[in-house]
Image (tube, rainbow, N blue to C red; front, side):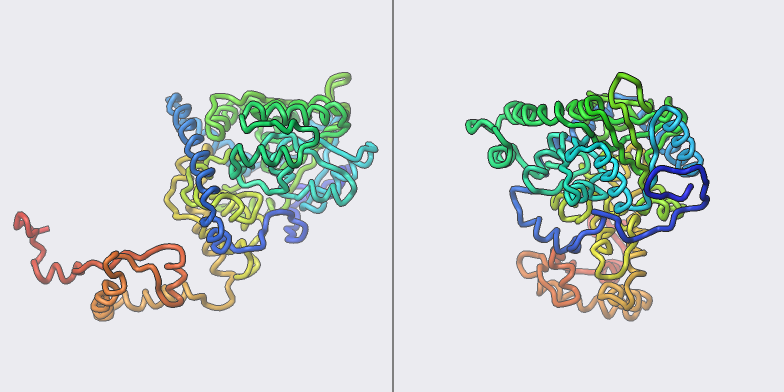
Length: 507
């Protein structure tokens, strides 16, 4: 891959992967470990109700539209194969994209990390003389912390996606890849609008249509005055230089057509080789994300068209740790993600704690893999070290993923990386070593079984052990242990000789 630099590319060609830098990576590492944050979120009953209802509705819609397609698995396999091809040829495809964007009047910039990307965007905005931008919903700009970086330069960024607007006005943080305000119900949204939205009718109700109309009136003024728009991209087509954004509201299209300058910040993995490849992903993405057969608004643009739409287009290609992930032949599958959020909607862990507990802009199963992969795990106190354990490894995320990312396997790999980051054995390491010592000897194992009677005493009448001393307290702090059985398998065999007590046959 060509080395990435801030600013436009000159004529020279550097080769090799860019140096992976931990500095300036934006909102990829939280400040609190997942277990501690999850423990706090579990106590929020309103949050759990909001999440349970919303994810349940999305799961049901997705199941309905997926069941309509006889070739759904073939589509998943095609999507997976296309993404694998992109990862195998990413350097050449990126150069092809740059060539075609430039040939059609656009400008391409390369950014090693979040700090460089934000600096490039801020410089481009200042060059227009504007002090505000309107934004299309973008995970990449959340990843880099662009809004905060622009604010430091005196530039105001206005979110135009309804859910992102709710989060912004509520001085909140997104908690879902697709539905950033999924943790809010409509009564909470009404209170935010009344408190933060200028000129809103004090009689505003919590009726969804009224809330949407209030947001529409607020945003329309921004659309008509903004000179600069900032977007992300769902896909970029290497052989034509075309960018693609899909959405459900139409606010993104207003940003992509009205302002004179358009700046797109895109992770380098968002490529597809040819325009016809979009056919596969434009079937997979809407069904997996919103449970729709197609996205209501699919916007594509190629460079600059005189007299139509933005007359200046800049594409900022973001690395921010992706080169390091690409270098891992097993882990690079995480870069296949098309940000559909299907894995979040089926994850029993996410449904109970929400996105904020993950401490990263990418929550849920894919975030538990992607965040530590992009930044690395610096040590046992790194909040990302606990993210790979934010899963039951039930496999629902793989079943739901439209491009067949084996998230459970990647989580196990990152758990190994987390263990390797510890300079000394942890309580878990010691417990597993003790278990291995006991289970490797029939005599020691039989002796340990005799101690199960104590477990039944601790369980009491409830039949569950809810509190154990350290280090076993790490388990009982968040889950109960069922009482041991009254009879072990060895004891049963010794008593019955392996014969079923009901029919007398050997088991």
